Image (cartoon, rainbow, N blue to C red):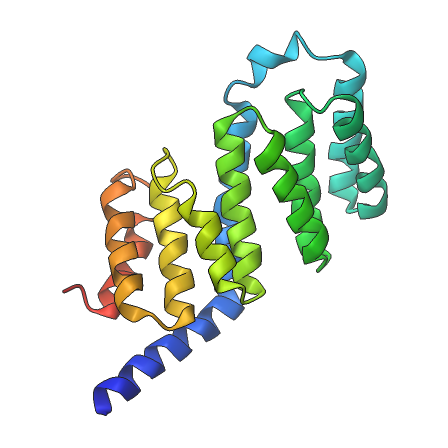
Length: 210
């Protein structure tokens, strides 16, 4: 009985931590990944993209800095309609998804992320969209949806991040044993010098690394 109570306390503490800090850390980490994906392969696309698409994306970037979500939606829809196959469109949708989350419009964020998953040509961008979508679904307590989103790409170059996110979902869902296994997989698959390895190890240690 005491063990059950201890488990419940650990899960409750993690839920409270997630509400206060977890989403911020997840969004911050994914922002770094988006920045990386934004540069990786970007130059290879630029020459083949319409100058108009580039202008629209530059305008969108300024709107994002100004947090003008309404005008961002117009710009993104224009890019998606006229330049859906370009390198700009999925990046624009990711920007709008981030702004929508910050504006507490998770439905709009989910729609943009689903669009990236369905339309982005670059696997890295699709993976980032899945990770972000899982965070949104976790915040909505849609645990099964989040697990399904993460399961679809566990064997990509982002596998470590997928398993870490899976562990977070499982722990908040209350499945401590499965969460521990997911964190172990995350540690095994993350690069040893990845900035979040130590953090995953701390979570694993708190659960009992047995």
